[in-house]
Length: 547
Image 1 (spheres, rainbow, N blue to C red):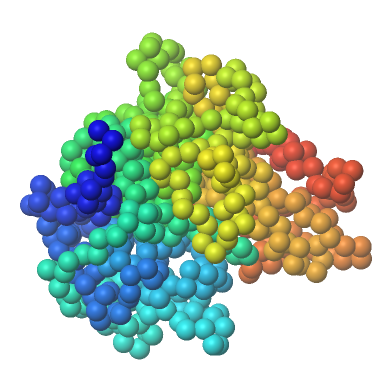
Image 2 (cartoon, rainbow, N blue to C red; image 1 turned 60 degrees about the horizontal axis):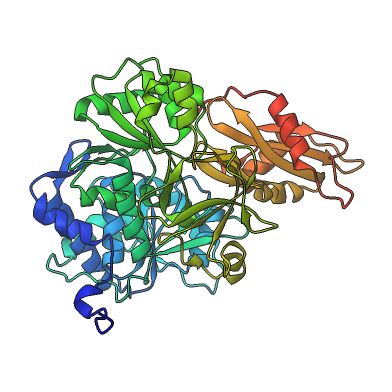
C-alpha cells in the first residue's frame, strides 16, 4: 500500500468550470438562461462562453493570471462571464454596481484590472472612474454590454461590444484549465473599499468545493428553476452561478426587481429556488400582491440573521426558507441551519426561532467553532458563553490581495480563519451569531464599514468626533447611525452633513440617522464606547424606510 502514490490521472485539478462542459453534454437542449424574450440552451451557453474566452485571449490580448472586471447586473452576459473569464485563464473580478466612481476607481487600480466589461447603464460611472486614474497609470480596456446586439460602442471610449466578442470568438477554443487547483480564479472585494480595499482571492479548488457543498446542503435537485434575486456580484451569487450548471438549472435573469416582479416571475416560470437577503424577504411579506403561492419556492437567505417574525410570515406564504452563513472570504455558505424532523412539531414561532440560528457546518467543510480568543479554547456549548466564530475548510480564501498583514491577522498557524463575528454554540452543536463584527453594519445584505463612514465624517472641517453604529431598520435590517460632535465655534446642519456624505461616499453607505452630541462616551484610554452608542441607537427604535 505504501508504494501507491497519486498519479496524474488521479490528481486532475478541481474547477467549477467543468460543470459547464458537462451541462452542454447532459442538458444541451435544455434551457440555461431566460431573460425577457431571450432563451439560451446549455449548449449555446457553453459555445458563447468559449467564444468570449477565445476573444479575450486573442483580440483583447488578455494573458492568464491577469484580472478582468465586470460591472453588470443579473443579465445573461453577467452569468456567462462567471465562466468565460476564468476559461480564458484570467482572474474574474465582479464589482458591485451600487458603488460610486471614486470607489470603482480604487478597486480597478488596486486589482490592476486589464479589461472591464461594463453594462450600458453603468458606462457613465465607469468612465468617470477611469478619469480619476493618475495620469501615468494605464487604463483598462472597456467592453460595452448592450442589450441591443447591433449597437455600436464607437465614440464612447469602448474597445468593442460584448456581442462582438461572442461573434469573433472561436467556439472550438480549448479553454484554459488550471495547472493547479490552487491557481487563483476569482477576486471579490469585501466592503470597506474606499480607503483600504480588501480583495479576497479564491482558487479553483475552493470554488469547486463550495459550489458542490451548497448544492448538497440545500438539496438542490436536477434542473431547478432558479430566480436571480441575489446579485451575482455578491460572492459570485453565493457560488450558485457555477452550481446551476452542475445541475442543469434554468437561470431566470433580471436586471432589477421589486416585489411584484418577483411574484410575477415565480408564477410565469414556475420558479423553484431563489436566494435572497432578509431585506428581500421583508419586501415580499409586505407586498400588496403577497397572496399564498401556488407552489413551494425554496429560498436560501443569509447576510444578516433573519428576524423570526419575518421567517414566520414568509413561510406562511408558501416559501420554504433555509438559513445559511458565510462570508466573501468563504465564497459562499459554509454553515446552515440543517433542519431536524423533530422540529416539525414545534409551534410556528418556536420553529422560526430555531431556523433563525446559523446552524452547523455544511458537508464538505472542515470545522466551525466558537473560541475564546484570549485562551484559544472552545467556549462552553451552553448557548450563552460568547466567543469569536472561527472556521477552517477548503473554500476559505487564499488571502487578501497585496495585504499580507491583514491576511496574517485573520489566519494564523493554528489553522483557523477568524471571522470577527461574535457567537454562541448551543448544546446541540448549532451556532448562533449574537453580534456582527464591531465595524460592520449589515444593510440590505450589503456589508458597510462604520470606520469608512467615520473617515469621511472626519474629513468635514466642522466635525470634531464621529462614531457610527447600526440602528435597526424595518426595511433594510440595519442602517448606519452617526453620532457626531462639532468643533467649537462651528455650525453644521443635519442636511449639510448628509449632503457632504453623499458627495464623498456611495449613497447606500450614507448615514440614515444623525445624532449631534456634545461629547461621545469614552474609555479611560480615550476609545469611544460603541456599545453604549449601539444601545442608544437601538432605543430609538426601528426606522421605517423604503427602497
